[in-house]
Amino acid sequence: FFLSTETNFGIIPSSLFHIFEWVSRENRCATRPVIQVSLSFLQIYLENLNDLLAPVEGGNVHKPLAMRENPASGFYVEGLREFPITTYHHAVSLINLGLENRKIAATDLNSTSSRSHTVMTLKIQRSESVVVVKGAANSTAK
Image (cartoon, rainbow, N blue to C red; front, top):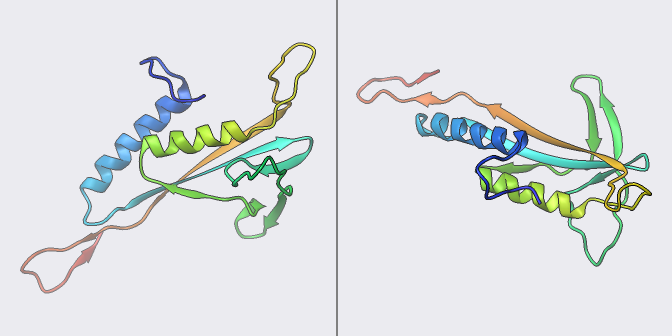
């Protein structure tokens, strides 16, 4: 669905590729991984929120998720799974899984219409790395 063998692929795959190149460079320079990436993928279908990365067993329909608000951190989807990812190919495999799980229904103009919206969220978090100076009494935090 998503990953193409062509060299001219869309903005999302291209962006993911460059993000993971950057993450790899940054993490190579640190004593431990300092950048962590996670991905979630949901569909808004008939006013219901569905986790596209939740396991689908035997064609069972998932219970719709609820949107909530936390006064400190804002809006979130309760029960939405978030997966840590470390490579471009891992991200693409999760996105392809989500696209396979999308609900589609034919319309008069489009036989594979999704009749929905999808939201893929990529969360990138940076933690502080610890730099250890050999021979020194203390270690310093960057």
